[in-house]
Length: 321
Image 1 (tube, rainbow, N blue to C red):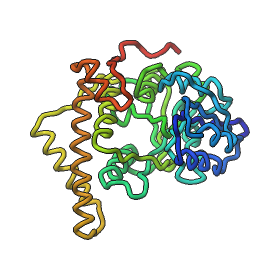
Image 2 (image 1 turned 90 degrees about the vertical axis):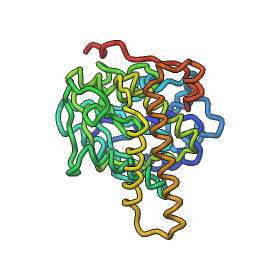
Image 3 (image 1 turned 45 degrees about the horizontal axis):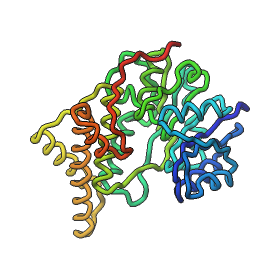
């Protein structure tokens, strides 16, 4: 293949990790020209200059939005396929891009292809196991997965897509662009593509290294934003209740501890504390985020890592094809 492919990255204050991402992109082994495009939202830490040093073309973004900025990256790039990363999602090896693009070779109607996240070295057991469990569930046999079910409802394997490690076919995007939604734009795009009659592919070997370890308040706010997004896009309300939640936390903590190798007591105790905190904070963020419509704008703003006060449920059909 000689058609160009674009790697597109939205950036704001990318820091040291951005350099690792850019180096990972430039190390890719591919038989196609690779264009690197970065949309920079007013960084003052040298992110734009860093990206230019890797040969990236810079688009200055005055007002960032998750869907709108990615549409802008699609518009300003030339690749027949556009692979999206975030500024802290590092290709796991030099074959990441080739493997990701192989998802489009599975069938002529594949519009989206995505791969898994691996946890960073030293990540809490809860974070590492959560990622391994979720992406492992998408393909238990390790083979690529195709989804075409336009009737699929709610968050789950059939509707999941991520643009932290995902690619979009230009021909499909021209018919079905990203919605200009404030969050969960990748989930909305997956739904719209499926309803338009296209397929999406999961490629288990096309991995990036991408995980977060937030302080408790920041983790709560990130979870709030994620589950508010799921409510807005899917209408999903996370089941909750004191007994149910406590049992779920206990179950997840037991699984985390079982996933660990033999550790000294002090290290095991540290992982126990991290695990309990992770699942407790996650549950609180999920319960409140999926019920964001019941909160005042002021409270929603406080709960949001992005400081967003709105609640904007999807009430429109997918774009016409």
